[in-house]
View 1 (cartoon, rainbow over the protein chains, first blue to last red):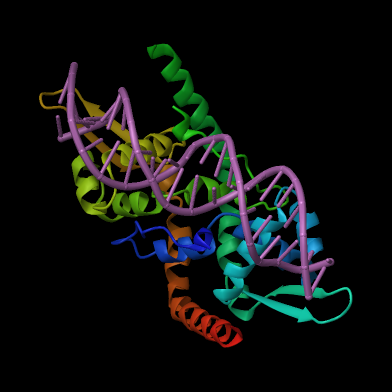
View 2: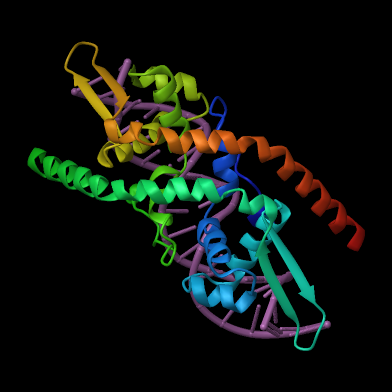
Length: 126
Length: 126
DNA sequence: CGGCATCCGCTACGATACTG
DNA sequence: CAGTATCGTAGCGGATGCCG
């Protein structure tokens, strides 16, 4: 149960860090994105769409997101059981943030170039 | 030397993940924020302002940010040595993103409430 | 199906030194 | 001052197995 404990907050003096820790902890972005893109869906569907995630981690992150109020979990007591996940109202309010993020992607190749430059210069020095 | 290796990207199918990994890896937010708030400054100044960060980790993150082209490092060969860091043009282009992030902070207490609700319900069940 | 329990490797992080 | 070197550790994430 020690797996969901939060690290000793390194943020003070930076007002955006709490939001970052909340929204951008590992795997939450693909999960929220998938829920946003494909709407309400079952556990296995999420698992298949995100592909490289393991069920254990998917469960952990979904629990966290549910606790934080970003995702709504609905349990249907049937045989076999059916569980559905969807983005909450609060989660949907992140949409503009994701949009801004997506827009910034155009700069990714600038980053690529910066890295290439940096690595080239390093190679000269040794 | 294995400390700066990136984890096996878990993102596919989510277009914003690359940006998230780049900008929101641990400590980068406080660093970028501090550089943005106080402008060009020396290593010790950053160290003091972020407070809970260790010089080792600060160095690691600054190197990464420099390599990614988000931060510019200037070395002055004096005695004692003087090194200054500042946000690059590319780094500055993240400003709207940080602004959106800061705006979303108003929802943090909604998250607090969601957590309290969730925890209360859990306590009932056991 | 949708988990939870358990074991386990790995590594990023932190603390504490020590240099040019 | 601006880092590096070394060591120890916690916790994430993967793998496996079991259950209602």
